[in-house]
Length: 281
Ligand code: GUN
Image (cartoon, rainbow, N blue to C red; front, top):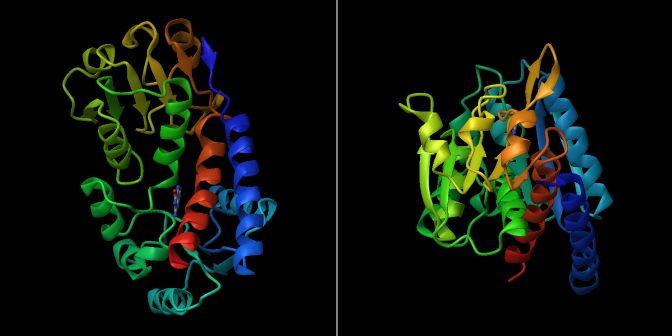
């Protein structure tokens, strides 16, 4: 079994991006900038944002974090986004989710200029991705996609099963696999026989947030299994895949942690650089 080393893949991608940033700096005399808006004091969000900032600095991006208390008014956030939209030194804007209840997530996402939407959540980018046009691609599915391609460069005709239908992961993941000519099945909590669906798959991407849902006898021998889950349990952090069981069947499997997570952040940096490059044309 191949243990897919997301830490190593992310470090390699960051090294490439660092070189690219240096080239862009010498060509344009400026570097791409990433601005993250963090609202409230949820610990996981704070950890993610700190990691994003650290990685952005490591590859040479200009990085800024704007913090607001939980009580911030929606209007304040929307006005800040407008300001960042017209700031030429800002190539990418990310508003860390989840947001406090009194702030309308959709309004915030739609306020971000689509050309600076490094999350790829703006309806314009969602539409462009599903139409096969150039767009920002959500970081987690992009990271999963790059890991899958490392194991199997030619995905044409493969059967892929995506477990989970979220806007963050499941839906964009499906688009990326479709683009590679996979036959894709999207499954979710109402799917009748999830085990039977998974048993058909050459590639499984599990992104539902249910600890160790995908069991060893759900996975065809030689399948590639990507685990997006990060679930806190009494036994520590586990994914959506039962690692011990599935590692006996699968051809390749991502661990949790150390699989998809590091790639998500590296892909955010890639998206920031890509937004910068498109803005320079
Ligand atoms: N919270 C958890 N994952 C993400 C993500 O990919 N983007 C944003 N903006 N917030 C998140």
